[in-house]
Image (cartoon, rainbow, N blue to C red; front, side):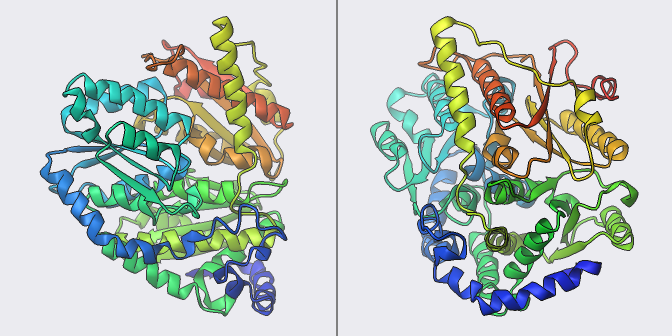
Length: 537
């Protein structure tokens, strides 16, 4: 890890001896909740990630055997139905390590947008698809409804008493999904240790089962994770890579440098999805937080505010010429930059553990509990109320759309960020439109920008939006859907539930005193570069 921290180097060096004196590293490994809070609630039962690789190493033969079973059964696709911590780690494994010859293709569906569901359905062959229903609690609404939908679809093409062979669940020990899976004849149940929070679970069954099925070299991944784990046991804070990164993150945030801007080699771009949730949901509470900025176009350093800490995750074997030049320019301009180099893609295991260790260290410096998510439930409750209203009346209540985009941006000031929240299907075209829009905002207003697809971000950065530092401006974008899909056993559709989630989140943001704007785009016009640019003041 290389550090170009400039004037902030001395601030970091001044704190490291205090961490040593307080034995923070030793106390974390002893599962001492007082590192974060006086009470153990939602801390003492959330530290299993520290040692989960020991358990998972014993399960390697089981994972390899199951992977072979699935290949021999002729499955060509693995469709993971999950949200947040259940889906983001597998998505990083899928995108970074790619499809391995002779193994099924892994597809992650972490959305109930009907257009997105149809895209996945059109891509797979139901007769040769294994569905992973992945949920820590077993009660998460999105994967449960997606299961109901695809169970009906599978039963339409195979004999009903064989449909269960197409489904596997990954869930906590004793969750409601365990009983459902037994009752409905799932092929396999993977019960994960329950003392691991969702966003810290990538090195448990939640990440390793889909990884093994897709052909990931699980022993190599765990070897790299364990090497980093050993380094994170070193008692000296300055020599402990996880503690050092966490200290930098936490101290910088206390100084108002709270926009952790993650730049990556091209092949690591999806790592930001996982890091976003880990950082935002862990630190964004009690009016504090570190805002992860992932996927933002790199621009001339003159457009960056003084609230930026850059972390460059570099894959040695990747095409780095362009991003190397951009990072050099940023360093030369005086912005603080940390560079982490991965020798190969299996170093993902090491980075998963490094960041899982660093973020709780940052949480201890910010004096927040990095293992709870107190504000996530508020949006779920608001969505539930809207759905009940729809079931009773056949219509959703009117909602306050908030400010115009022009009013929202005119009020922006240094240190703010614009969160763009799009309730639409993910696509390369939409990614390009949003990247262009983010660059325009950055260069005109010099504020950080973030972007998330709904409802995915509700299980990720949504916690920080409501509970973190109140310096966010929130732009919600909704669209008419090309498709609509009835939900088996429900009186509402996937489109209507998506709309309820958008309205519920906007309502909670407004109740939290956040500045919001909402833009709706017709099916005919869609979200285009021109439609967004024309709305800028």
